[in-house]
Length: 474
Image (cartoon, one colour):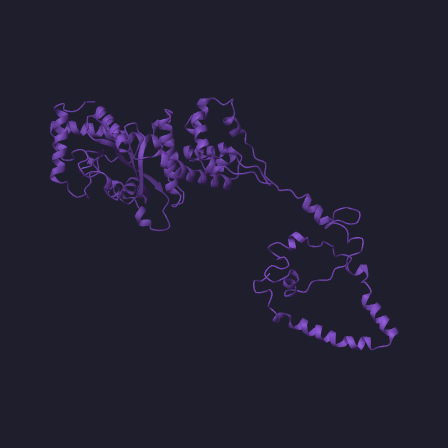
């Protein structure tokens, strides 16, 4: 029904009004005729139509609940009636109804049997393709060994159950009249398997007995749930009290004072984006692969246990130093007499809150010993990123996820990394054969401003203290 059809639209009804006026003008002539002719005329007008005229027309009156619904407003709503809405549109076709049908319920005949359209609606069924869930039923069943479950989903049953409980409110769905909702455990398992193996959605669909589009939507839903629900509580920057504890652990292990985190930047290759493609062009990957490559830079800060305390994502065309300069927390470190620092490789600039190795030639014994301690402390972040990519293989291959969903996917992997690390989940030795190919050990931050003399003097004091045993040794 068009929006301009309604009460007050009298112009389209002008022909009908003219016909009504003409009929009313002929009424006096009818009653002025002879009384016998008058009764014959009246009987002719009141004679019902023969049933065979509309024999094929099914009588199915409109229920009052439909008439008073959104399509046909009830009488008195807005000063209009259902009849007025229908009168302004098309002419209503005539219907015949016998007296025996007048007292029957809508859609039923006098014998109480439903008409054919009503029987068709009552017996309508939804066709659903039958898929096998044998593989998932085996893994989720009690007969599956714990080692097999851990290899499949990178975590034990207990950790998996706790993860499902944490995500249940965000990913659970309700049953409908058409089908039963997919359980939360199966939804989380679909996402973990996709992240862990990077299998095509067609294979994931076959394993879990679900449709390809269903698997895709489930993976995206769990991505965003992990990033929105668990990231604020799983990836957290240390508070002053906990920062002191982290600094004490770094100093006890590597002899470097005031270290609250180790930083490492890795690259995740992506398909060439449709917009702003130059920002994601990775010159280093292009030279290594001998073809145009695109990536995003993932800067991760890890504590002494290898758990991430912050993750920052930027376009892959930026260097490690440029990514560090755009980092949201860089303004919170250093200054104000605070002795809190990060430790990184030579691809980062030397600053009052960033400790990096000496990069010049002909190192002294003091500088060489300092570089060894910095490399060991920096290895905490490097090892964490290596385990991250080894555990979730989707980060090893070129990602085909849309750019708007890519940050959620990377954040989901980092959240799951922290969950596994803090739960003590061991990584399969076969997975640890993976080696990082974007090591920044030989890269020097040439695009950064030269360090201030005071910053260089502070690094020299730390190096001198390490050589003379002022701090704990490894």
